[in-house]
Structures are given as structure tokens and as C-alpha cells.
Length: 130
Image 1 (cartoon, rainbow, N blue to C red):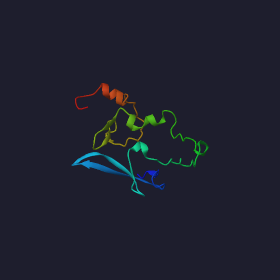
Image 2: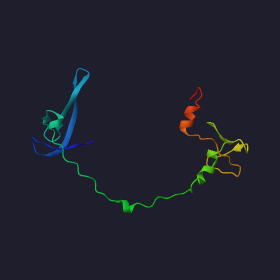
Image 3: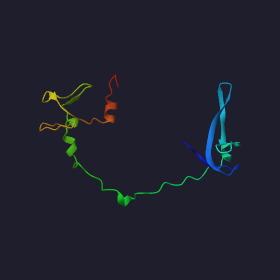
Image 4: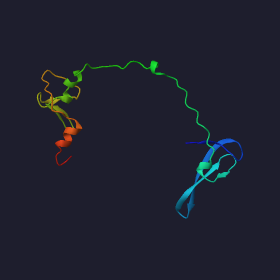
């Protein structure tokens, strides 16, 4: 990332050049210099950084569209992913009630809510592999 400075030595608007300083094979620091004139700054505190202009605001809160609510409260809770008969393994998603392969977003009339499958409940019932 290029960092712009106003060089105190030559007065030009230039980029800050960072070069590593080595003693043998060990890095001992960085040399900060002006890309226009090559002046080496003694420390980073003495580098005259240019003030970064704030990006223009193109949109305001009034420009945002209203939040879209796709599901009614609880409507998305009747999908197979939340059913007690939904079995997942790495190769297939399976319905134990219908004995067939299903997708997590499928629905059926024989839905029965599963116990809470959140991360906190899994932590309490953790087996030897988890």
C-alpha cells in the first residue's frame, strides 16, 4: 500500500519508501525514505504523512431500501433442517420418516420439531469425537 508524504527535505508530495535493514541475515529495522529525493527520515515519528481525505459519502440512510422480511415468524422453522427425523452425514441428507433423501429446505406434512440443535446444546452433550 502506498503511503503519501509531504517531504520536509525537498518539499515534494511523494511516496514513503520502506526498506528493510539487515545485519547479516537478521532484520534489524526499516529505513524510511522519500521516493522523490531519497532523504532518509530518522524515525517514523518524524515522517510528514499527508492527511488522508475522507471518501465522499454517496449514499445516506434514506437511500437504503426497507428490510425485506421473507418469512413470517416461525414459518421457516417447519423445514426439514429443523425436523427430528432429519439425518445428516457427509454423503446424504436423509428423512428417517419417509426413508428418502431430502434437502435441508424441503418441507412435509409430518414435520416434528427437533430438540434444540444450537452450538450450546451440542457442547453439553458432546461425545468423545467432539
